[in-house]
Image 1 (tube, rainbow, N blue to C red):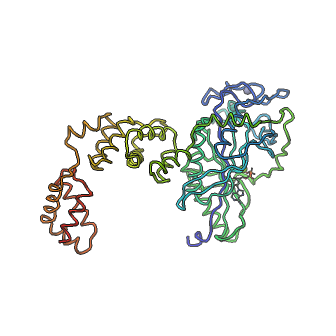
Image 2 (cartoon, protein in one colour):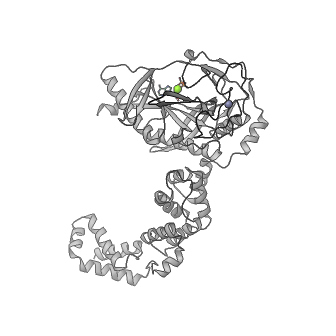
Image 3 (cartoon, rainbow, N blue to C red):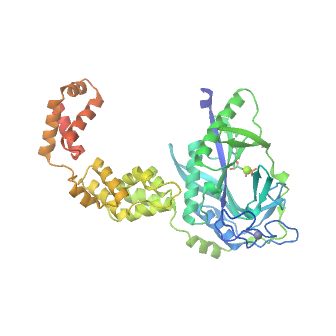
Length: 476
Ligand code: ADP
Ligand code: MG
Ligand code: ZN
């Protein structure tokens, strides 16, 4: 375990995103997820000889959106190439992709990490077609479903700039957020519309030279990605320490065992015998067109984040959480219109998120105006933070009016100095053991005494004032 600290991991990600176009990349077949097998295909996407592909313009537009949203340069000329391989899920025996002239290059995005903001390079984004799906059946054997053949994809390749599992997950979450904002994909990892290949190598800390990488294919959850990275890192360190050499290969992560296994030794680009697809003309994009696409992109996570930090005083970390989903950012902004206390609003929102957003839902389960009133009352000192929690629960479960609820239940914060001072005096005189513990240096005793003060005010005392009065009494 000690030696693991002598190394660092180097990670680069390849992310495939299915685009939300109505039809496929080279034909008019539909792209709906979950349709009955082989009901959304035609001779073109099934790779019949003699058919001709026609590029769907939307695919280019969407890929350019992704590129602009990740600070890429958009190529005025790019082309499509055939990547040849034999796979049973690809009847054509080649995939139309982009090789040396991709649509987008030289981009980046920023992530928040423990060491602060990190800029992660994006090498390229290119367009390509998805392959079909193999269905393994106990009785019938292996079957093929061609519905996914020709569904448009973009592949987003990062520079090897990531240094931990946390970095990798933060990058993916950021990328996902950006793509969701642009509206070009639903990014559902469980339906395969966002899939990730993890390339990982190790090197001694302080060394510049990269080690040999392995690639783990098609990871489909943030949790698996983090686990696969931790496992693979440890495996490589142990191998190197044992004097073994890391071989460039493709590995499979098995969620059940938490381990990675070798699938095949890694192919190189020349194994695919790439060549320009003779059926497709080059893609020419004028700056007018690119600017037009640019205008259609809404305010992106970083722009909103900057605003939250500079205008509302949020920390970059908190702002990042709120912008991670467009619907959460929209809820926050709607609520923020109603309160001066935006930072308090953000804190309440973040701490209540697990109750407000259920898995797979794309809404915040509360009324933003009612929610903001709780922040306003808390910020104005009308209620204290434990009351705020109670009130929020009522807002979330019963759509309660916060002010009414507080009044009807007598939950207004007690700010009256004489009442609070009395509570502190009584707490001290009635609990000599706690007082002596406190004086003997036990910090926890102060908390217990604060608890007594709160009890005396039925949980409604102003905690800042109570703390001051209690400290005053204890210093006597
Ligand atoms: P391929 O298409 O063969 O997988 P690419 O050149 O497109 O190869 O690179 C794939 C990914 O591997 C990129 O995300 C890149 O950042 C990453 N990568 C390259 N070299 C290393 C390395 N030594 N360690 C970790 N990741 C690497
Ligand atoms: Mg790869
Ligand atoms: Zn088709």
